[in-house]
Length: 81
Image 1 (cartoon, rainbow, N blue to C red):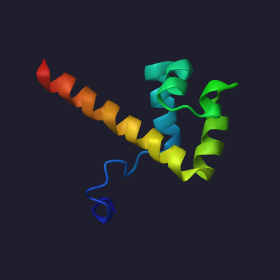
Image 2: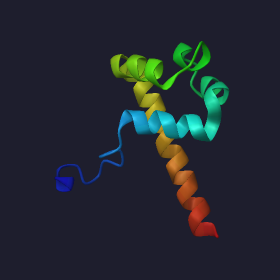
Image 3: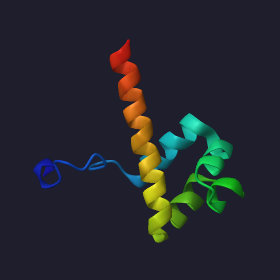
């Protein structure tokens, strides 16, 4: 099954895992600054964010791109030490 999308870095990563990881790493207020969407700035929660992101492709794309950028940064940090 993993051969179906060998070049997709998000293959197997759920949107919930992405949102929880970004929230833990940045917090809601920083997420709202990085990606200015209401679900991050007004009464934020994982559930409300998931509901919005599943319906809004452009916002989901921005969240996924931030997650991938964070992953690349963490990989560079790990290999640098």
